[in-house]
Each structure stands twice: as structure tokens, then as C-alpha cells.
Amino acid sequence: MSIDQKVRKPLKELGVTAPEEISDLFAGVGDALESERQRLIARGADDEGERERLAKELRDRWLARKNGLISSIDECWLKAAPKELKPAVGRAFNELRKASAALEVNALVKAIPLKHAAKLQGKLSFAGEAGTAEHGGLDLTLPGYRRQHGSVHPVTQVMREIEDIFLGLGFSIESGPEIESVHYNFEALNIPESHPARDDWDTLYIDSQTVLRTHTSPVQIRAMEKHGAPLYIICPGKCYRHDNPDSTHATMFHQVEGLAVDTDISFADLKGTLDFFARKFFGEKIRTNFFPSFFPFTEPSGDLAISCVFCEGKGCRVCKESGWVEVMGCGMVHPEVLRHGGIDPERYSGWAFGLGVERFAMMKYDINDIQLFHQSDVRFLEQF
Ligand SMILES: [Zn+2]
Image (tube, rainbow, N blue to C red; front, side, top):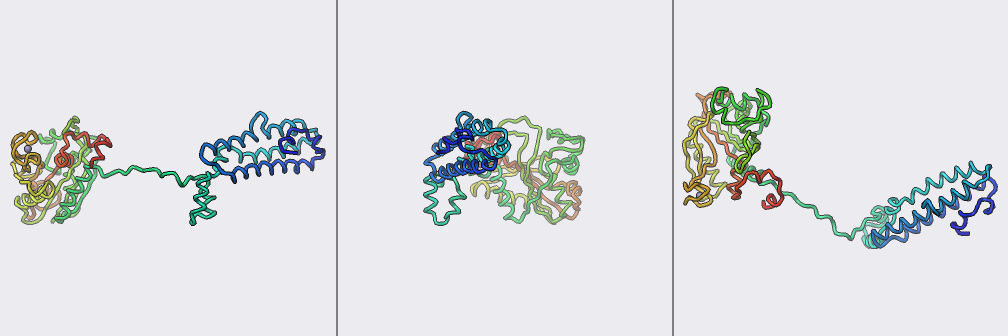
């Protein structure tokens, strides 16, 4: 008698009258369930669709509420059982239901292998039998997922390029906090409360004594305090200003500042170093020019201009027909600033410069809007 016929007959008709016969009866059902499951796994499936269809078929055969084998057992054996058999049937039925969890569709789909994957694994000597069991339904013939590789952000690329040039000259890299005290950001740099220059930096204050640093210059003071003289450093990092965003201003941007402190440092050292740097960065054809300027932390102060990279000095829209483009501020470190850093200005002198990394990247790659750097637009970023 097939299992299908059996489960639709009452116990009496099956000749089961004593509680001790119940466990044998249910053991037979459990074996049938397991062998049907094993047969399905041995059969395998051609594709994902077939695998799911087969899994559902077997699940429904046993677990469907209407006409499933388990519900038939519930109806014909358990509910219809005579009083003296009921406890034993109930226990055995609960066990069977637990065992039938192996027929849930997800469990079955995982267990049924895809045929060509199994075949392939048979061919792969390293897979062996363990491999077959381990890989289960994994289809090794499908193409892999292509993961997109990112690349280094253009601002970071340019920053590294600048760092490399100065590292080659014997400078080392210093960093400092982006949340800075008013002392390091302004006072130690010769920008006292009353100084009009303090208004020029529309600063983002955290409280009256704490700001988001408006330049990387505070790192210079910290480095002088920490290392003393002689000192040859560059300070790359993020800065923050309360600027309205437009094509040349952003509330967050990157700077690289440089500082050299030693005995007998003169403006000639500054000019020579920055001229070398500009030609390394923009190309050997570049010429440099220094214009007088003003910064509270340097004396004398200057702006470095390079011959326009777009028109090679002939005059164009970018250089406003002058042939020159200002690229950074620089100057001899103000004696007060050296003193704030704990260095004796009678004995040592120094020069410093500060440049905007985004501006350098814009010039190098002919980009006309600083906002593009911060919009995370892949179409823009993948060009670098
Ligand atoms: Zn030009």
C-alpha cells in the first residue's frame, strides 16, 4: 500500500490497535518523507526556476493544508484515533511535524543542487566530494559580479603630488586638529581680536574660544612648539570658512602650507623653493613672479604668480589678459609668530606659504567650478 493510500485510512483499517504499534507506523511515514527528499536532492535541477518548482511540489505534497499528506494524517489518524491511542498518536504526530520542517521551500531550494554546477564540480579535481556538498546549489558557471573600482579623488591626487614634491626637498608632513582654539587659529598668528584681518575670515565658530580652523597655519605654531628649529614642514589638510558657495568658494576646502625655519633663511630661499615647486607642478615652461602683498603673519608678504597655463602668458580670459595668475600667498615669517611658536627671532628666520589645493586642481585640470569636487558625481570623478 502506498503512503498516499495509507494516510487516508483510519488506524483500525490499517490494523493498528495498540499504542506500541504507533511508533512503527509513524517511523514508516518519516522514512517515506526522508526518502522522497533525498530522491529530489539526488535528481538535482537544471536551473533556479526548476529548483523552486520541484521544492514547492514536494512541500505541497506533504504540507498543503488541503490534501497534504500531513493534514490527512491529522484527520484520519490523530483526530479519528480511539481514546486509548490518542496520546501516542499525538506524540508521534508532533515528531513528524518537526521532521517535516526539512520540506520548507527555502530549506529544500538550498539542498537541491543545480545539475551543471554539480557536473562542473565533478570535473574540478580540487572540488572533490567535499566541494560538491560545500558548494550546494552554487552555480560556478555564472559570470562573477563585476565590482566597480573607485579611484583617488582629484583633490587628494593633487595634494599627494604637492606633498611628493616637498618630501623630495626634505620637508616632512605635519597635521593638526580641524577644530582649533582661537589662540592657535588667530592670536598666535599675529591676528589679535582687534585686528581687521580677523573680519576677513568669515569664521565658523563653535564657541567664543573654538573655531573650525580657517587655514592650516595653526599647525605651523604647533609644529614650532613641538619640534623647535630648524624646521622644514608642510601642513596639508581641510579648512573651513563661512563663505557662500559659488564657483570659486566652498565652506570646506583643502590647503597645503609650508614652513621653513632655520638660521640665515632669506627671501631668496623662499623664491628659489617656490619657483622649483611651480615648475615641478605645472611644467618646466612655467615662469614665476612675486608681487607684494599683506598677511598679518608674514613680513614682508607676497603673492606668487605663475605665467598663465592656459595662454602661456599671452593673455586670456582666465588671466584677465595679464598673462599672470596668482596661485598662493607667501612671505617671511613675522618675528611675533616665531616668538609665539617658542622660537627666538633674533637667531632664526623663516619663510612660509599657503596654497589652496582645489585651486591647483582646477588649474591643472581646467575645471571651472569648485563645487564639482564636492558633489560626488561619478561622471566627473571617473575622469581622473
Ligand atoms: Zn592666460
